[in-house]
Length: 274
Image (cartoon, rainbow, N blue to C red):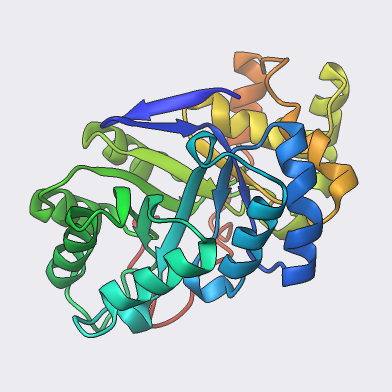
C-alpha cells in the first residue's frame, strides 16, 4: 500500500471507509479488507459503527501498530463538556488508547472555528490522537484553522470525485501543507455507471470505479473507498498497478459540472468556494 507523509503522519493513500454501513456489514467486510491489504480505516461518531469496526479489527487479529485509524467528532459534541468525553467514548468503542487521526467532522454554524480548534488541540495534547485534521471546511476556514492550531493540521477530508471541481481547494490545501482526503469518490454510485469512465477503464483492464480511485491517488490525494461486499474489496485495492495517461487524467477532470456537489447539509456545510 502506498503512503503519503505529511507533518510526520504516514497515511496509507487508500483508505477503507465505513459510512452508511451496518454493524453486521462492517464485521463481515473488515476481515476481507485486511486480507486485501487495507490498513487505513475511516469512521466517525455519527456513523454509529465505531464499535463494530473495533470489534472486527480485534477479532481479525489486526496489529495496532500496522493500522491507521481515523474518526471524526460530531458537531453536537463541540462543547467543553462533551468534546473530550466523546473522544474517550470513541476510543472505547474502537478498543484503542488513541486514534491516528481525529477530525472535526463539519464546521457547522453554531460553534466558532477557534473554539473547535482549541478543543481539538487539547485532546491531541492529552494523547488521545496522534494527528489532527478537519473535514468539509472551505478555503477560508482551512486558513483560519491552520493559523489558530498549535499542532499541524494534516488533512481536510472533503467530497471529491470526477463530477466536482475541487481544484481551488486542493491548491489552497497544498499551499498550507495539508493533504486532501477524498470521500464520496464513487459519487453515490454514478462513477461505476459512467460510460466514459468504463471506456477508459477498458483500456487498462480496469473498472470505472478503479479508474476513479486511481484518478484521485494519482493527484496526490488520500482516497477513501467503500464496499459492503467482501467479494468487491480486492477490486478496490487493485489500483496501484497502472497509471492513467495525462490525457485520460484531463478527460476525467473535465467531467466536473456546476451541480456536481452531492453532500451539502444545511446548518453543517459552509459557503463552498465552488
